[in-house]
Length: 286
Ligand SMILES: [Zn+2]
Image (cartoon, rainbow, N blue to C red; front, top):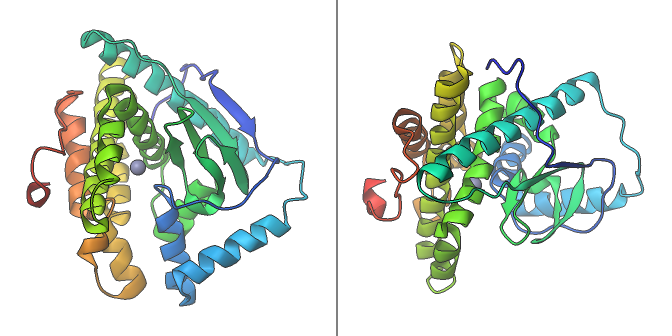
């Protein structure tokens, strides 16, 4: 990506080095980390999650964080991508007669107190609608690179833009409607709604990139491929096959690799905020 001359967002709160609390459920990226580690070590993912959480609680005395130059540049990158989403979504909301309220983004290490409870890094990047905040431990990007080979600036931008996509869903009312429905149905049905939410966030990440590129010429050769490679490696089927040697479609909650690629591409091509209605196309047509 070409981000030279782009502004950095003021809505980033740096809480690296401070850590409190205990684990909560898995966020968007958490399943990836747990499955990767389970795959590599042959452990039960749930036992692993518990152990990681215990370890993290034991190391919580750490109070200062020393940032490496690589991490420093990831902080600048994250602030620029966040600013880019603010600029583009402000513009796109205006087009539909609405006002975009930018979310906050909190950088943390090990664990964090969010409006949705305490969370450890093992949950991966996540969006909390209660405090309209995205939480990221930058070590997730290293995990993406080293463990699943999803590397490159646009791969990272896609992850951030996906979380911002959840904020857009929240502002448009789709997120709370979906969560309400999820609370009333079986686990299998709830997973299907989750897939619709996640694929729509992928779509909205694509919509953002579409407009960012048309306004700032930010995408360079190979960027779209980086996004597609990432989408292909974080599909439920791909991760389950790697971890367990088989897929369990009833437990899919983020969508298959093929679906994630399709919705990301769809957003990239159309740039239409309303063009990604994953909820009404029917689960088998996603
Ligand atoms: Zn998500």
